[in-house]
Length: 297
Image (tube, rainbow, N blue to C red; front, side, top):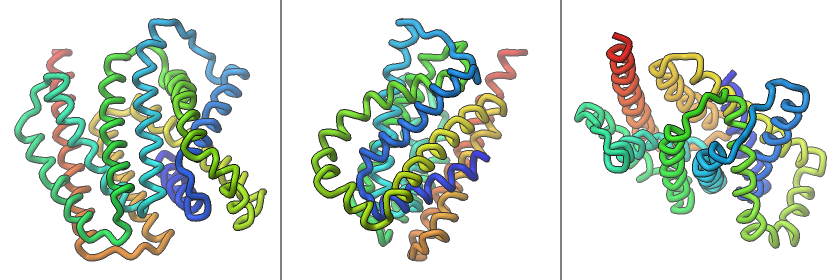
């Protein structure tokens, strides 16, 4: 379900950008639909809303701000370049995670882990050089997204709480929505009112436009919720391997759905990057499992 929802989200999202290129507004829609979904779920007691206090709020605000920045910049990238290429760049996320762990958190990263990241960096560089849809806006936005999600994971570790993942993600979504609204109004508001909405309606009609925005928001929220719930239920190794395979699915299905032409070099580079991420994820998850066994022993 996690893969299925993610693939559908990515394809529908790109289809919207093909006729409505306003990533800041669409990012707000994604989060808005999710927040409404959470509020309705809370109102019927599925799940029961967990209480929020000022201390927890202080811990969650940095997580939510990084989530908002990462989400918006991902969407700017998806709007600017092919989905397959955006996901290839986002495969660099483990590199930024490792760098942040070593240089910000002061954790020692083993040489084997750094070595496993070499094919990721090489593969992404190779794919970028001959990517037909390449532009700097898409590339830089995906890179900012990688850095934002890295900081999100750092702040998430500091904000570890007994709250269940469903409630936690709901609160993060609400705060992230509040963060995303001002830039969407400032950067895209005037264009949307002048011609953005009119152009979209002329191209696809009101019904399809509204239904596309609703469903893309619903798929976005549900795939994130399922990813969080999956992490809660499986071992880190299983989740790490699952995450790599998910990217393979998204890249593959997006190439089929949009008929993207990719050069041989971009294809090989993407494969090398994905293999590198798989090796990195395997080594890292193995290390975490060994640490856990040492603690229980």
